[in-house]
Image (cartoon, rainbow, N blue to C red):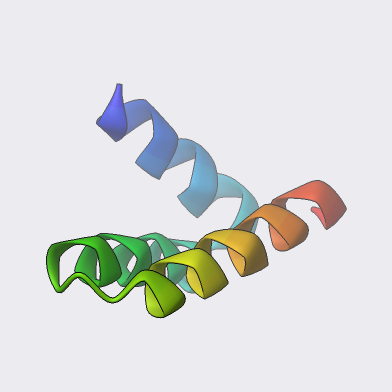
Length: 50
């Protein structure tokens, strides 16, 4: 499942999308909710416009 999401994001947003989802993962692992939420919201907005 995660691989499919990664491929979809990369196809639609390129490297920026992959970096945003990496930031979400890092934010969750580091327990930095503000980083994870901001990256997820930005990725969602960009996916809606792509």
